[in-house]
Image: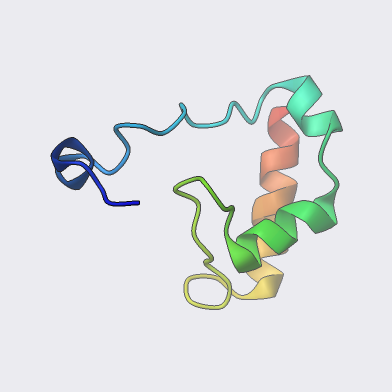
Length: 73
C-alpha cells in the first residue's frame, strides 16, 4: 500500500488520536509485561516504534511503565 501525498506531508494524518493513559479502562486492560513488550517491539498499525534498547534500557522502561501507571490512580 503506497502512501498518499498527504501521508508523506503528515505521517500522522490517518492515525488515531494518541492514547489517553489516564483512562482507567485502558489501564485495567493492559498488564505491565504487555507494555514492556510494546516498548521493545513497537505497536503494529500505530506510530509507536520500538525504543528498547535504542532509547531506553529495559530498566529505564520499567520506570516509565510505573510512571504511566500512576496516571490511572
